[in-house]
Image 1 (cartoon, helix red, strand yellow):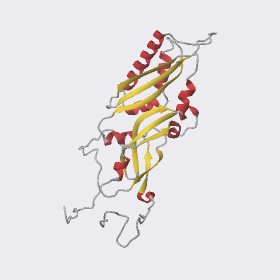
Image 2 (cartoon, rainbow, N blue to C red):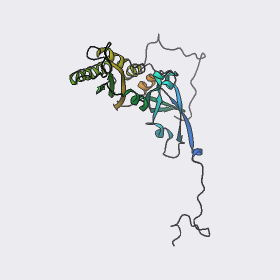
Image 3 (cartoon, rainbow, N blue to C red):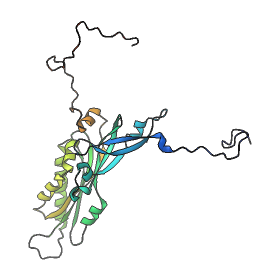
Image 4 (cartoon, rainbow, N blue to C red):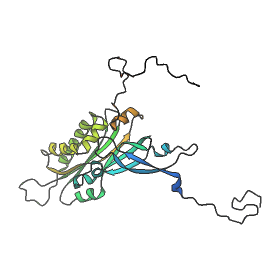
Length: 268
């Protein structure tokens, strides 16, 4: 056998010499996951990534990671009303040891969805694609169930096909109205208390009374090109608009001693 073909077989060495095993965790670093400022809890958790080595940069391995967090954890509340709603956060930028995340989607837990589906009622679903004012294309899914009317003695509460169509149209109209007129930050603010679902429930009372109305899922279909100032604004660390002031009245006075000369630099 030619020397150098079998890596395990060295000249004068034993056949099949074992490669030295090193713990992969010695190559990794921990990073903090930071949620946007719309949530009460900013420190969501930690994530691992291989340290920068050669051309493989650690931050590139972190960007694009998606973290799924319960709303109860994000709002620091233990009530059941919050715990079944999950938010997806995507890492968009890395600053120091912090991963700055942005909204990437929302969903309900499987057990909540399964517990709502029952017999003797009609399930109504609607979905539509809406574009926010800051260029995010969202696909929003809504779910609702018919409920018995007051004083009803019937076992069932089925809606007619035309009523289902009317309710679905109302769902789509309200979602489009609420989402298309605001930016992503305001959409997330509406999703936290699920105010859109409450509006749908009220609007549909005239067609057929509903209960268990929820925004079932939100997907981010398209996102605009990455903008750091927008991300910093989501994290409450930017003004949202990067403006440069040339007015001497608004500038900050830098104190320097009299006869100050800037130091001469060795290289430029």
